[in-house]
Image (cartoon, rainbow, N blue to C red; front, top):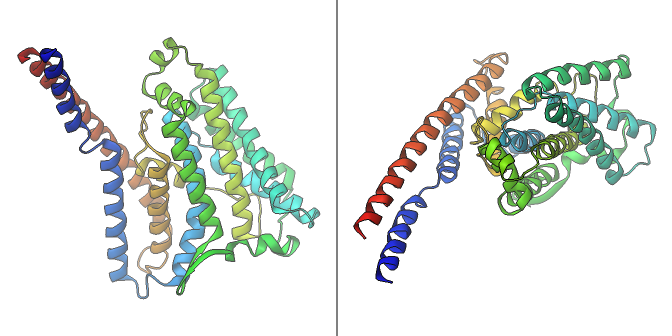
Length: 357
């Protein structure tokens, strides 16, 4: 009995040391630090940097990027990637705007449902191709990125949906406010994105389906041997990613009003950057939606802030995103290697403690 208690005590002490600074906590705290540093630096460079107008514009931009990044997170966790999310946002935005232009009496619930269904359908196509065609996701979605955009161009025929063609409620959506604190306002679009991010985060952490995503990404072969249906998990991840991109397409209509065939172009880079910078491992099996949400805040903050720095050309913004992705991947690999080494040392320490019991 005493030996068993000592053994349990040794395991408990090792477990306590392991839980002091979980990897995800370290990544999140580091990202928060980078966000605060970014705000501090730009506050010194840009006059009236933290104005209410700038914050409102930032929150609206974040709402779209964060939704796409959340969907991208689900896919990356399973050791895949979706390069077509920008095109899915564009298709969903254009079809939603086109429908609203022809049916001004259509309400928000129907418009949201349409956008989500369009996005989910395109995501389902990606998932089926990846799961059953046995083609790497980067190749599949690189192809569908161009296919979806080409289909949209053919369908639109050069027609642009103007703001004046849309119902007033969606034109007013970017100015809709949930909470007002002094001169600062929390926009409805941002609140919606935040709620969805929190719900997805909790679902991934607490529901069995969420754990299945992590299991498949961590060790696909072991997940299959454990009886998990890898094909179904991949299809669900891509479909959910498409649905979130579709919802982002709906918000895109509200933000810009005027929609053409270029809608959503480049969002895939911002979404992937937000996820990776937010701590989602490109090797799969690690990362959180809230981390990706913080990553989207950083990407949006940099994007909106660099516009206000006259000395920096707008053409450098994509280059900066690329550098952020590269640095985040290199950091992820380095941290992963260090954590594996630390895990091996802990296992050795535990074994030694057990031997002395």
